[in-house]
Length: 406
Ligand SMILES: [Ca+2]
Ligand SMILES: [Ca+2]
Image 1 (cartoon, rainbow, N blue to C red):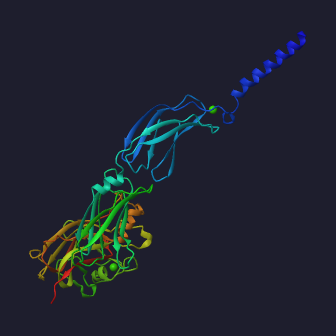
Image 2 (image 1 turned 90 degrees about the horizontal axis):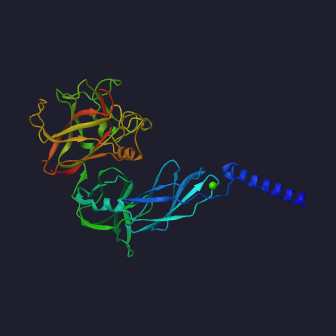
Image 3 (image 1 turned 30 degrees about the vertical axis):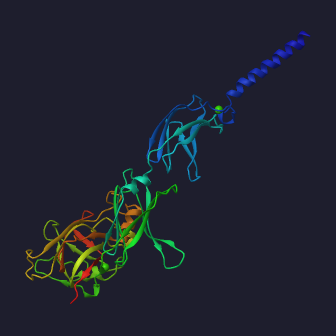
């Protein structure tokens, strides 16, 4: 009998030892769930909330997971490594309260008991952008300006109602995806009939702002006929031709419609951007100008967008009557202009975002002050380029306005 007891005790001892050894087995085979997330604090943000917490002491803890559901039904999961003490929950399209369920998860994939924390995000960025958005009439369409204080990525959509069929449907006039602080875009191609424009903002989680309608009467304009434009060589103008090409001005290249091919652009070289970098051309018609668009050279796999000799800043002048001496007295300054790289990324080959590239392909559009008298001749003074070069170059200019009838 004693022997039996002894055997039983030894056997139990082995079991106990084995149990203890189990706890020191490789951690990813364990079945012990971590403790719960503790001391949860919330910082509510526009359309988001930061959640801070203390993690349980489990040595095999791997990450913290937050789960929540957006109002549009989208299920969200956010994970944060054990080495940080917070996570960011995004995508909230309303200022309602949302339940965030927090778990601690260990290396074996065991989930702790949930902890539910309520958050109440601030006004989402889509609403902020909509509230700071102004639609107004411009030549041939609608001008949209906005402020995106949080610089969150949003899409801005402008629609009109198609009433040509009996069934009304919305047609997209244009859209832009942006995260720049201050934005400005025009959607054109309209006659001067008054019509309603509808606009709204959407984010990447498919949250939509309200839709606002505004009645707009576009100003009349046409694109000036490039077939009428002629170069003008004044005595002190810089010859705009590339040094690799022999002789003669290449000014007509800025109205040949070629943006990317060989010979698409003009190019001039000068040691000094401060004073002598200018050239002149004739519109072939006197016109009240509304705006113009400058296109960078778009060739060579786009490596030179916002780089090298591409024009960055310039001054534009106009006059109705040409002074052949080249003197500046009769030229009226239309404006100082700067080509903007939306991302603001540093200048380097191929160093631009999709938004930057889209801006280059759409062309850089500039307004002419409404009060400018009609002009026939244009003088352009280039004051800086993107790269570290004494070359200046661009591919094309489109000019818009109201030509005077003869
Ligand atoms: Ca565990
Ligand atoms: Ca061209």
